[in-house]
Image 1 (cartoon, rainbow, N blue to C red):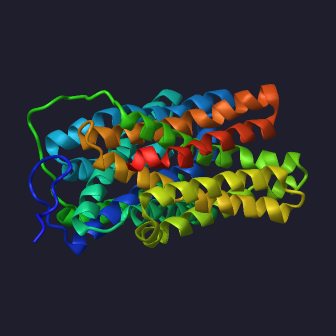
Image 2: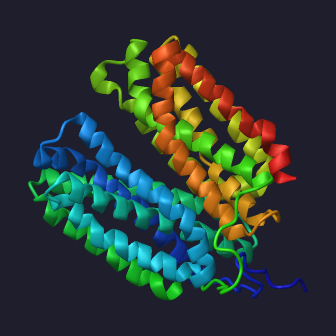
Length: 387
């Protein structure tokens, strides 16, 4: 008989139960739902505060900075106090702060609220990924893609929920209170079933990424950079190529999102069949081919197919990288997951700006070709990452 799976944050054996999977799924759902609820509120915030685009951009940056700063500390907190406490507190924190985003009366207040909201999101993201790796390891089969798929589902539900209420003339505060209540309810349901991970009162408070973890962090940043680039620049790319009218520019990202969600919801079966190495190779190659199809498209149908390929190809790259971060032995797993998560969010934050900077100098198409070259690092590094 094989030994019980060992905990990523300690030496105690882990016994996985179906309710542990439910708790992790609810955590990913809450994270996606919560951050998506904020997106439809942005125009209301701008109107309420009377700020211009520059000031609004600074405010939006506060959410990302809060997330990244919290992620650096979340590995240590998860090791010290266990992922269960961090997940529950972060989930309740997001629920409590969401209504504040709807009525903050000054730019400074909204900036602080967004930073705190982002910090809760970042802490939840790291803790739930560590917990998900524990659950997956104990289950003995791939589960990470499905967990990440629930984040995408939560994002879709959150954006649709908030848009529907605002379209029905709900006040933003009332709409966010309802959203916060649903989030809090989900956390209450998940709380008793969150897998209790080991705690350690000794050991380092911070571990600098090293060795293979640097490579994993780089690949995560590249993958998230691609997602951010498609989000922020795909519409302009399509309209500049005269493939669609400006009013239809969002179709590309919509197709990308649908493909990525579908890829993740079916990804556990794909990874179980292909293995981590082949998943990185095939997924990376498909994503690169998708970018090439988008840039070389003679008609919009080919461009739309490119978005689908990018979404399907990239869908399971991050879940595999998270799993490998939890399995490597060059540094404590909790700190490795924190480093990979932080690098990924840095890619989302800095990537679109980098694409814009490059586009100003060499053109948007050339910038996307460089993005394809970066994505090619994933299949090229697959052997080293999975060795």
